[in-house]
Every structure is written in C-alpha cells, then in structure tokens.
Length: 222
Picture 1 (cartoon, rainbow, N blue to C red):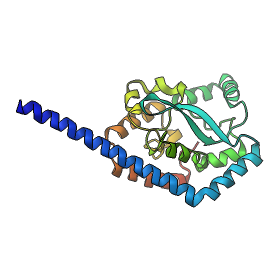
Picture 2: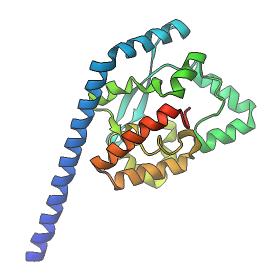
Picture 3: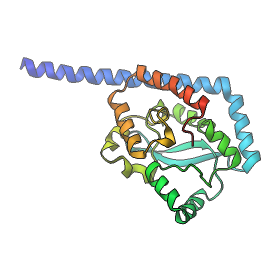
Picture 4: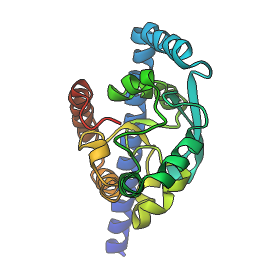
C-alpha cells in the first residue's frame, strides 16, 4: 500500500511540475509578444504598408494549421507570395523534376516561383513571421515550439505526431536554429520530438538566443 501511495504521489508531483512549467512558459510568451507590439508596433505597421504597396491586398496571409492537441487554428504571416500561389507551385512541380524531389524531402524550394521580390526580403530575415506574435497573444502559439504543421504535412510526422500535439507550436524552435530549409522534414519531426522530450524554460531561452544569431545571418532562410 505504501508503494502504491508513493507511486501516486510521484505521478501527482510530475503533473504539478508539468503544469507549472507550462504556466511559466505561457507567462513568458505573453510578456515577450506584448513587449514586441509595445516597442516595435511602428515597424510592424511599416512592413504592412510595404506589402500593400509592393503587391497589393491582402497584407496578411492566413492559413489553417494544426496546433496543440491537434486543434486547428488560423495561422498568420505577412504575405510574401503571389496570388494563386498553390496553382503556381503545382505547375512548377509538374514541370521541374528536381524541384519535385526537393519539395518531397524538405517541403521547401531554393528557387520558389511563388515568392514576390519584397517577399524574398521578408523571408530572408524572417520578417514575414512577425504577425505570429498575434497568434502567441491569442494562445494559438508559443515563442518556442515545433513550427505550425500544415494539413498536407501531418502524415510526414509519422510516429512523432503525438509529440507535436503535446505543446503549442512556436515562432521558433530547434528546426530554425539547425538549418531550416537545409534540414529534411523527417529530421525536423525528430527535432520536434526531442524538443518536447527535453522541454524546459532554460532550453527555450537558449533557442531564442540562437534564433537571433541565425536570423541576423539569414542562415537557412526560405
């Protein structure tokens, strides 16, 4: 009886520690996202205007993505692609065998015909990701976590899907600091599982600092 009681106590302790960690992580998310808009709201507005002037409406691109527990949410980015981007991609992949292979492995293209000239600048320095601070404030996303998964990418996670659904997706994560478009999607899924298995605020802080260095150098962007 004493052994059972001790085991139950250990489980309860781990549950409390997990809840405390997630509550602290959420507090950091709100503080960082709120501070961004207070300090850099003017820059956000300038980018918005730049997208409108360079390629018209809409300035914000919205797409359904999978979030925590597999819940679907509306994901925001500054629009960096042309109209009918899905059609443009489909035609390009039909006509270019090398592009088909690269897309199948990475879900990214070195030369993406969908991206506008201004959009290429936004993507190079990850400026197109700024609207996701709204997702963080809304509770759809976290500052650090797996990148939000598109519907077409769910099956690529395989046995790691449960890990993905265990936390909120993030603006940045292990994938962003490990090569981004240079990393295969299979490896990306494994990184997400490793992140969840070793989740800690200290790890999140380390990833955030490394993200600043990667973005400044525009390494693996795209």
